[in-house]
Length: 354
Image (cartoon, rainbow, N blue to C red):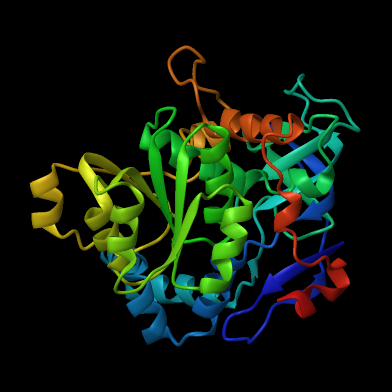
């Protein structure tokens, strides 16, 4: 089968023929129909792969700590061999797909071969003709939703979890900082929730799209952006800010503090630098919350790989239930993701797309 892979130090990814995946546990084999290119996240992955070892270390100090820990427990030689082996292994790109079930693990009864499903997860829902996906990282696609629309499921769940973490109420005013794909989806979800939306981005070309996605006001991030938001809210500031930007700068966190009302909430979804301006956040007694990707269950092996669900009454919105809810919003025409599709490529043309 064909799959898109990124090799270390190479300029762009390439499509290669690789063995088809096998059932590894309580999951399903899916023949993909569509996969979504998440521009910001995948660009970062490609840029990281192109860096030298020193550049990678500066960009990912968390991985450096892991390596140093391995050196202490396994020794320098063994750790070096593992690191070099990892660097030689290509990275599969993509983490949001939609397709048809081809094979099902014997332990699962909720699926039927031929079911249309949307799939999530880095290393699973890849840009490939066929994928293996654990059961909790897949959801059935409603009849009213196309494969193209369903392929947004991962980004949709991430955006939805960011809104949930913000704990927003009908009629509240919310600013979205960062109007990439994730930010545009967040604007849609907020409008569908009955919130007033203000969109902000350093790229002025994204402002008009945000208005089409539900933003009542949009402002370029510059020296006057805070004043513009305060003016648009009658001098009060926004009830909450959702940061969907991806940057090594702490600018979005500082701006969020400036435009929030007293006792407002800042929900951080994107990968931004977290240098918190204490005085601003302290004086306003702001609540700072981090949104963990798709929702409860994320990074939990027992949930994601082993397929153990959390009790519905205790954890209402798991990552899987967020995925379901997002697709239901599309089915009910509450949000329109088709407007966010800019290009379509056959997998053989994937390199052109990137």
